Length: 441
Image (cartoon, rainbow, N blue to C red; front, top):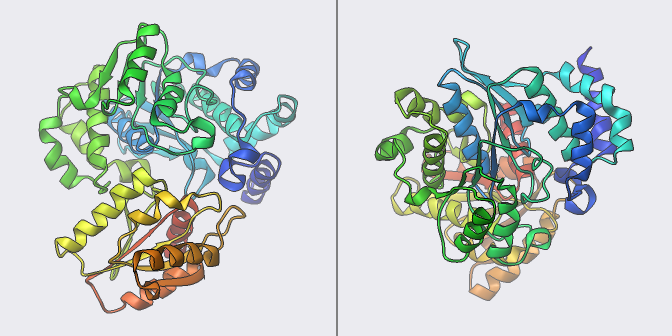
């Protein structure tokens, strides 16, 4: 197999079975488990021979999944990890970190394994009317089974109850957080969304929730009681290692302030599956991004000036991100803030615009995808809101392409070490920014 053959097969897959990343949920999302169950039967039910940790949540599930995988590998386990979306490479969705090896670093599924899977089951993809996500989920199930991993961490794609991953019976079910996102598919209240995500609970299987709140806790309690599933809340659990959280958070290569809540969930999860906390676990968690090749979470992608990117794109995530940016200015860590920002065309900006720091200069962009909101349209939305609030529209610039936005941001920050550039709003914007910075180095 050569690289061009692999790229050709992958391109055919993306065209014939478009992903949510590329065409949105209306064009790619197929709720329900019937197709996935038929596909698993065809594959010989590889999911039944793997021990799983199943994770859902509005935000934080990717970070929690990667931290847990890194920690489990530190105990000498071979750990599979299935997450989405990918940032730079399709194969990021499926990784194995083998703690039995001397040099512990995650490996991506091989190009040959991807191509073989596509070629072997191509006719079945159409016959079973599979979605892109169902295909990749089946690919992960088979790869983890073929490699005989000791355990695998599985992240839902959307929601939980009807998600393709919800055909497994795990050792532990985790819900990291509940916020208003994908409301047209999951519900218009946090309680409705919680009910969808609680659909991953299984009979008798312990369930862990990131934090308790009055609106969603009754939903989780009712679902857990009906399934006789022991229910735990990470913020009320006395997890081993939490007394070292301050030092760990300071040392972690995942530096977003939101990682505090995620770390608490990770430590509670490890305790529930009887993994003893020790120095090796602490080190593995602190080096999660490096060990797992994990991108796009408060990632420092440039120096002089400092450039940070983050894929947070919904109001709960952006509220935390923008608060952290403000704190940097208030603490004097930086004196100027430039935000390179782009969104998808279906993004509801009403809940986002009020969160955007007034202190920043905004360079508005459109990533290279059909789903992107044109930068001119984003500029108009922002300008109208700015004028309503008495802000100066001069703080807004329409740069067009992401590359133009990055070049302009760097030019405006040139010679000023006290300037921070933040890149975000969309996974696509972050992906392009990371790739471009790597090309330009």
